[in-house]
Length: 371
View: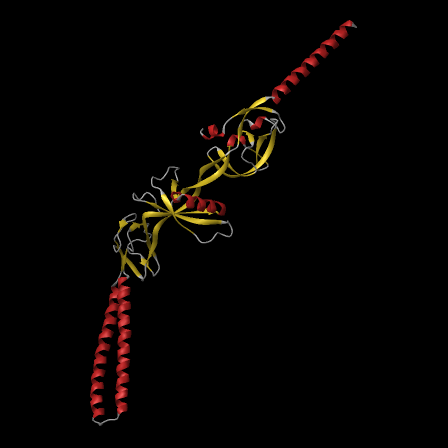
């Protein structure tokens, strides 16, 4: 009996020790020391990146304007050309013959008109002498007017033939770079056939879409500081383009489906590195006044919502939802839900629970921003 009593006493002692140990752990958890910062407002700048559609300031398709065979190709793909430089030659024998015929018709009609004019002068003399009636002169004058009209028509035909002949020599419309040449010498081409494209890439445009909220923020930022019209370009390989650009224009309407509006930035391209239809991202800087900023480590997500732990006057933590306006580096800019002066746990939020009492270790927000 004494043996059983001793066993029971030992088990009871172990149970009490366990409870005591558990109680000590709970007390230690309740007094967990965590870094806490007080929210303040600060003026900052925000960099946002937008996918850009890069285009040459001029990019024109060169198409044939007459039918014929491609007789000559004077340039090569990727070649730099100047305005007016000869690019292609299309067979022109047919158009030379057409011009010769038109000129011959014009010469014949001019001669016929001169003959009619002489006849009109002779009839006028006879009418003045009352040898013939005046109606004869009216008939001759009508013939003369018809002959002159035919001359104008023939001159138009000559001009049209000269124009068609000139179309057989295809020239560069401006300084630029030749794109791919899909047809080869001897190809039969028709009016409208694509011969190549010419791109002027001495400067390039970068088009990108901005939401309505960001558009309004940009306008406020530019009115405060005009240099915020300057933008940077990140190339497809992630490197920064050496030249900065500037916002040149904004479209007049927001897109109905997306609620965004298109911006156009212009960048210099002296080395020709940027090409038409290249890809990249535009970095746009906007100033944000009196922003409430919180560190990323203070934030956790639940059901697609963002939360922080707010510390009350008794040093108990409470989950609180907030709406972020933007994210930069390792911080969030708060749109709503948090106010300056509130204290939040700025690190270790995954190891605590709602209602837990902590020992706050004060961390100034300035020290977090300087990291």
